[in-house]
Image 1 (cartoon, rainbow, N blue to C red):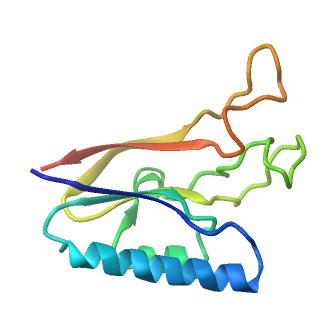
Image 2: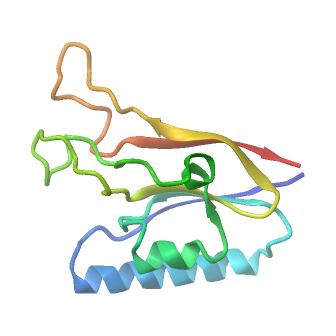
Length: 141
């Protein structure tokens, strides 16, 4: 069965204009997906720069399911690493989740989690990115 995959990276500035821009981006993205129909299962991944309670994520969750939430009952503790500019090497606080894997239709999440969450063995200040990776193992009927 065919599966449609989408990857995105929403605007990053965290101010009122940025919040509005991300909401508009989520609307346009869902319109794009609507244009391809919902008959085939969908997978949407990316850096949405929006918290789980943010309007862009809530809008997406009206049509799709968070793979991590589907398996664990909640989003990850956080998806940014200590390399994030705002942290300057400190441990991220809980709740700063901006990276997601969403699924729809007959796409069934078998496994989901966070990866790239350990620092380099020889340099504890070095991570793969300023974001942790999120992954999902998905089956399609």
